[in-house]
Image (tube, rainbow, N blue to C red; front, side, top):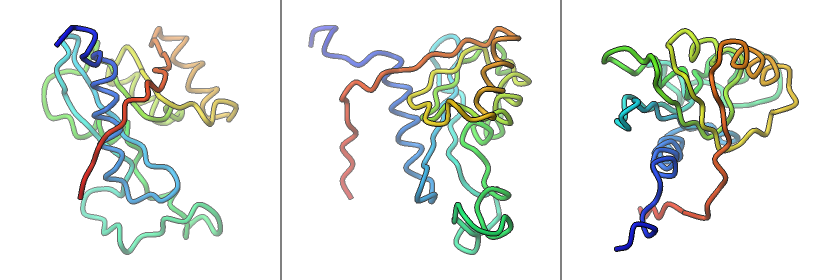
Length: 159
C-alpha cells in the first residue's frame, strides 16, 4: 500500500471517537471522545451517557419538558467521561478528539486536566453561550482547537 492509502492520525483518532459515540443511548445527540498522548497513544475514551451505576434504561432521555424529566441533569458528556475514565498518568499536553465541540463545563475539565488541543468534528452549537464561553476560556489559556473536516471515510459496522 502506498502511504496515501492510509488514514491520518487525526482521522484514526476521530474514528475512535465516532465509534465510541455509538455506545450512547441518546437518540438525539450521540457524542464520543478520545484522548491521545503527545506520542499518539490512546489514553482514554468516553461517550455521553449516565454515570456509572445509574441504570440508563430507567432514566429520561428526552430533551424537552420538565427539567427533572429530561436528560440534561443526568447525562455525563463524552469529554468529561473520557477524562474521568482515564486511570493512568497525567493528561498534561494531551489532545482530545470529540465528535461535538465541548460545552463550557467540559471545557473547564479539559483545561484543568492539562489537555492542550481539541480536535472536533461538528460545532452545531457554535452560537450558544456555552460554546462561546468555552472558546473564550480556551483562547485565554492557550488550548488550541480545530475542526477536522469530514473526509467521507465511513465506518462499516455489521451486526
